[in-house]
Length: 116
Image (cartoon, rainbow, N blue to C red):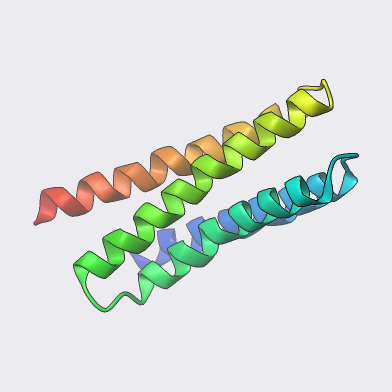
């Protein structure tokens, strides 16, 4: 489990990404269900990371972090789909931010496993 200062910052960054992606998704001319899937995935990253901070055990912590990582990967997928549907690459920065969370969460998983 990470130190409080960095955990707070990571949560802030996750919230920021959620806000930006929600606004972006709502501005796109695509099927509502695709917007909903993207919004569900991006908001789930921070929600699961937040839950992990109050985990009842190391196993519970890792499980929540795994889920957050999967949601970050899913966010990248939906952003790629949106870009393809709208034939644009304006969301590359968002994809990059989501990908960074995938890497960060994997690093947390690896570090936690090394400690056991």
